[in-house]
Length: 226
Image (cartoon, one colour):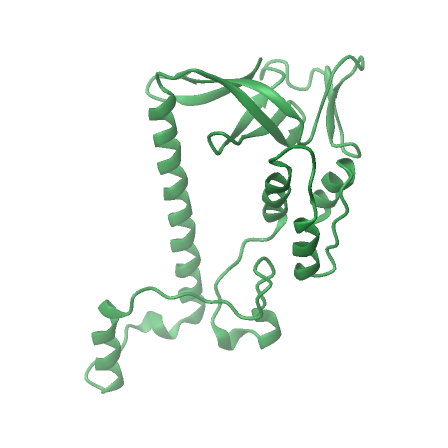
């Protein structure tokens, strides 16, 4: 699960202890560099290497399996407001009416909870994307970004000033796979075949941000190297 993070850490000269979530948290506290955003970026990368937390009914797993790795907590749950559910639960406890059958299906309950959480995350991301497009539609901008993921045709960058992340392509779709660039997994770099140029993980790059519309009514924020 954490192998990609460990490769990145080695490539930037950072030692991370992943023997436990507490050890990892302590390691992250000491992961500092010259870049003021270095620690924040390492933490972002660490979070993304972890599996998504999922819901379960307490009777389906043993207590040791309740552990939340990312929070280093032996037990974690959360609640929504019970006000609108109180009358139904009270009526069921008094034998006045029965709870819906879904309340007896633990597998379906956990599936519904996971789906609701996923939908909420997607709605949040869509909202951020919409407001980002509105903000940058008439504001083409040049700014600094940090490389957070290496790809075969470019890399993903994080823009600290705006909290935005997106792809930067070094080749077009037509040129993809042409062999001009290759990825060095050990060093976490993308390099030109002739050795004239390379980009590494967490490197600072200058980019141009602009809203473009490659298809009618399908605007997107395009990031390009300067």
